[in-house]
Image (cartoon, rainbow, N blue to C red; front, side):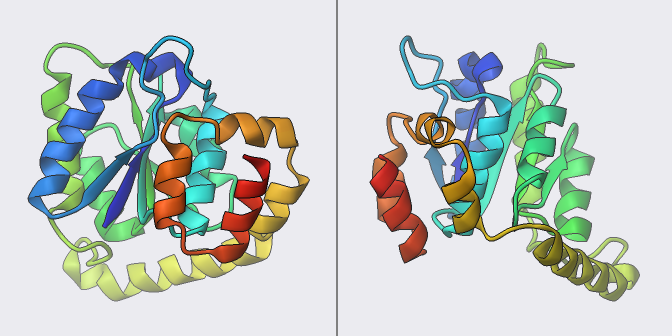
Length: 211
């Protein structure tokens, strides 16, 4: 699995802590982590929580990554922004139990974590436990197990609803404010990571035309 880490501006200084905890767990399960920033370094390209949602959608819809780890101060803004785009199903994850149940029941492709609210001493251990509970089993197995078929059916219904209620991602990219889009994809490593992993030719060509 290819996993993207994306930090918005208010929590950029915690990028290294989050990356270290995520990579420690992900590497154990042979997942690759791509750190798209923000990195908390001077002069880097800015990402608001709305841009986090847009960047997550670009990466997931183009299949440049399979999963996104993001968040903000409360986790709410990044979660809402992610879910406003097609083919992104993002859960608010506060503790390891949330992570396990989201993966098993909701079978989404992004999580948003609060990195200010309740984030204090020992939080790197909480992050490791969140990532461990998220990735230790294949997604969508259901919980409790006897409800698995019903939960899988509901997930498919939700996916079908989102196809009706959301525009195509390429159409969104063409209609959204182009300066806003350009700022969103101006991160230090975006072009390298994206060009190496993007599997959607039309999105790749359009994004490169903006860059």
